[in-house]
Length: 86
Length: 235
Image 1 (cartoon, rainbow over the protein chains, first blue to last red):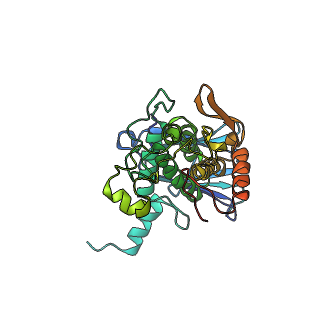
Image 2: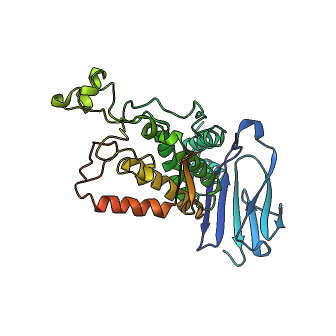
Image 3: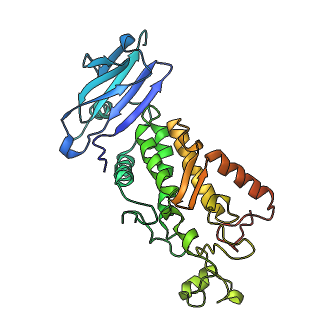
């Protein structure tokens, strides 16, 4: 049985702003606040800027050409902007 | 305490990004439920038994079979994928699990066990006669939901995807297989896969093959196709 610890409320790429918009939900109570990661594929990590909850973040690394973001289970917003984005 | 507009604006910004679609709390609750339900191991082979959380009770006599729960569960996945197009893996997983079960023996339980005319046709509950059976056919007509595989002129056709009847299920299954492709981009269900999977009653199909047969079936029956044998759909 698979327990979905956390769901995305939002996950959409804005082509005009060249920004991936992600928002996570509170997650299941037993997992809330625990560290977690998620990966963004089809993106060039070196040209990205990460904004978490409105603040620039460096909690990411490149894994196999993908962007792996470290965070905690809970409500967060992520803006992954590609180079030169507004 | 009176809250200012700025206060609420900050809260909204903290939980979602304004200006973009978002899954509601209710939708996420439904997603969690469906994900747990679909990924709970059970056995839909002839010798197995679906987990009790799959509904085979509601809407008797027409839809009280497990496969109706499968097809009704899939629609939300397509809608949610449209809301979070950059996060679709979870919906693909659920739809794949639904499709694995939809191609099993238990998804065809009615077609493979309700053979010939219904021996109970003269003893149905009174409300079934009122709702589903013309008075002049009382006692001589199978209730909707009785699939009647084997009756003439079609005879026994256990491969449901090549049968004259069970057209509703062909359409339902194509929808579910197609939703998986729509959500995942994966062509898995258009590659040959086995259905029913019960020894000699194992039939190999593809999405396109089923759709082609369904098209031909409709083309040669302009009066309409039928789902349960003897019950035509005048569409």
